[in-house]
Length: 106
Image 1 (cartoon, rainbow, N blue to C red):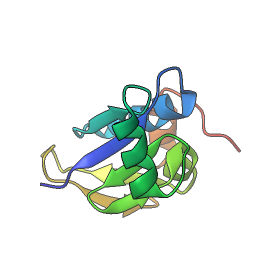
Image 2: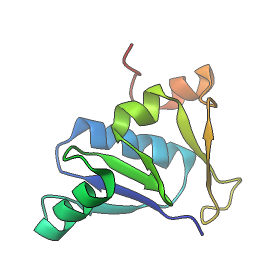
Image 3: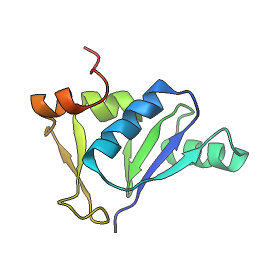
């Protein structure tokens, strides 16, 4: 099972955008709020190398934030099995863009 992990904080529109894409695809993810504990903050920085959120990991594959997630067109594919996922690229179609609960920045 490939684990999706996202480091976030409250009231972060970029975190909300990243979670919306993951929710749209329909895969499970583990969320860590970096404001809850220093441990969560340290883990996010240790694994990502940066202090910004969101930081998204699909297994060991790191995606640096919501803009990278959206603008580089990374998408998760589950084939209906939410425990078996893979990263695929360049698969966000115009239809997908219209279904997401936000607009892509140009």
